[in-house]
Image (cartoon, rainbow, N blue to C red):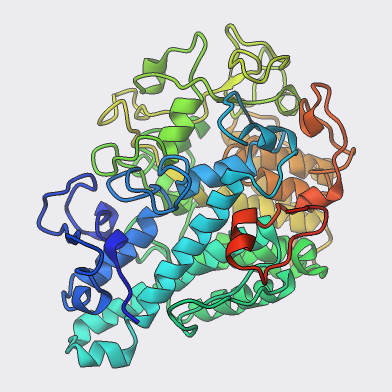
Length: 537
């Protein structure tokens, strides 16, 4: 069966060594077909440059929602701006928690603020579809780059060796999507390059089976990914695979019912001591500035999602969403390096409470904007209800302007070494044999010293402390929902925050909401899928 690659062509990331602007429709490497049948996979892959272009599309899919920036959306039924992978991860990982709330009333978006979503939620459908879209692209790339295919096309040995590295990266990005699907939705189908191309109903697998597949893939990728720090900035290496494996081990009890804290601790230790990534001994705020790809922050960025205001014209996805939507009220957009605010996302008072009083010796990670903002949120739709957040900025760390003020340069730190320190420390608290408490305290104090926070001792190292410390260090980095579930505090009544459950004072929610529903549209398309317990289609 012929497979159209119409939607491969527009985004060739500059980080992959292809010098071009992603918004252009007239450059030499623009291979957009005149119709759907003109641009077919076999014809496309006759061009030696095509292999890196497809890999670039896979990376670009993390930031933009469609071709031509956010236009020509990849996912039907949801705009390219809303269907950016990074934006959807923020929506699903942050809005249902104490870390964030959004003022907008678009469709079913408000239900994510209150843990009252249903299977018809279009943002959950977008998340599910975006992940599987990335998987389908990776699978087709792997089908088209077998030795048999490459030999038939006369690909030379040098390019074949390069393509072998591309294949490993495609497999990692596929595993990354499966981790998000497993984490959010639980039981999902597994499709690989070995499955047929064309219409068929992929078989739904249990969460434990998905975990086992991901684990096997990530272990195997240690043999084929490039060495740590040996790739271009923005592309992944062996350390990224170890990080993702450590992350699923940290959450293994949730995913499979069996703890793997020892395994998570061992991998974390390996990353910290022998990966070549190093702690960025710079002011905390510089980790999230416009030049965080070159100001020292990059030393601890294991997997950044690259942003470039001139090259990646995503006007509503990725970091453009996070920065624009976090500006409003009396805030000066120019001080954040932006041309305006969308008055959308801010934080809740219960999250603010985990930081010390900013009038005393302040934890510099508490980047809250209070002027004209109320601490409590009486009206979810009013941006001035709830403290705003200035963690991310589109200004260089020396105070100079970024390339432009409508689309930011700020890279998003999907994986960074500070998280590995926190994973190791949590494993130590949980009794992992491969984690040492004294070492763990040292790692946490490195984070706290950078933030100008007081140092701690082993007696402070409790589970409640480490959950709060993860919040202080990693907030708005798309970890909070997963963390709260692991600690048993996402649903139920053990941890309450404003508007949880749909009331201002907050209320306990049902435990079945630890999993999102399989989207109703997805079940309509594949009636063999079974809905998660607690949800009715």
